[in-house]
Image 1 (tube, rainbow over the protein chains, first blue to last red):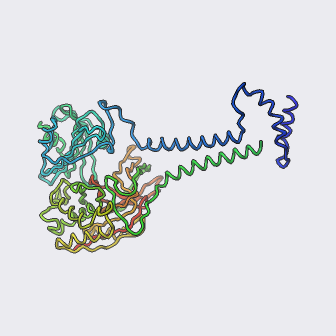
Image 2: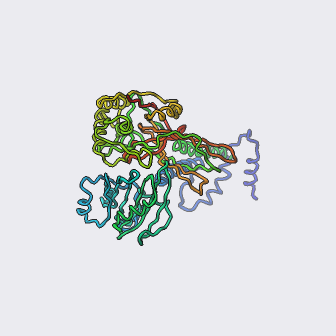
Length: 230
Length: 289
């Protein structure tokens, strides 16, 4: 240990009330620091300036963190390029009412899909906002039955993509076979009404079927058969 | 050296305070300040002032009990999509009220049957583009001066427009009240209204909407799917439910939900959680004679 370090240690041990000439410390430390500075190197930056720069950097980092992480936290994973199995949340889809009769719309768009015809129907078409691609159709149909009426919602998905709109069907897990057709289904009771959900693929089209009824028995098979003409 | 240490401590404290302030800023969604005129705008497309954020949460318990429940078994829920407009919650909620009373007051909506008895219970039909309902919502849209000069509908225009509609169709509408405070309502008044085949209306300058309550983890928890919006919004209320959550044999939380027809374009029905993100301006009971 050399004499300079001893002096520094003694200064450090001084009580806080003692005042030390800071230039004296600089004079002791400077030659050591100077020796460590590379040739033609950068200017020596004083510590307070370094801390100041670090403060600015930390605040910038915090702002950047919030700018990036908050929007990301509210979003689903980014969709792969068009053509693959993409994911679309509802904000990425534009839904418009189909004003023409549904058979005419299907023919105009050269679609090979099955659909329902109830006492009263609402038909809608969903397009991707970015490309304007027709991706699915929805139907809400009212059917009269012997005991009352059923509300039937049908989603007809034209692509291999996944849509937030149908995520309620992710919770159904019962596998059944109806007339040779593999169907995943589930049933709940909501406010004293049966809610039956089913999803299945038929001739390369995926169908999401929801039946709201006061009497559940045989209803799923009936509406699947009605839809597919089985 | 010691003064540098102090400086560094102060700096660390300042950075921590900055982070805390940022976190707090994101945690508390500011409520829109409305001056004298409240405009009710919310729709599935938030064209009006304000925004909506997810407020989903899980609640874990040993078991839960619906302690109290008072609601109409069925209530209409329309979307008003035939209007082709945004910010239409006022005429749409007005339509829901009108369809509800059309069951008891014939031809309130001309030549329209709003529902039928299904398996022993009267059920309102879904919104399947009924021409009569489309005509009624168009009439309400005009009577309420919706989107006239600014997005949405003024509170007085909503109330007067609905009165005028009923008057034009041979009935009289007046308003009772079930307001209690900014984030709750008078449940006894609402229960009495349900018993008398009446519905309520809440006019909010900020609100939450519960889309669904799903039991998860084999019934050990409920997942509440909810949004919080600082947008003026009007909804029809057709009942309430109080749920007690138990842990170790004692109630540790009670939630009260209002049954509402959303007034959204999707025509969804759901709930409003009381004593939560909510700023009720008025809670009205619709009296018809």
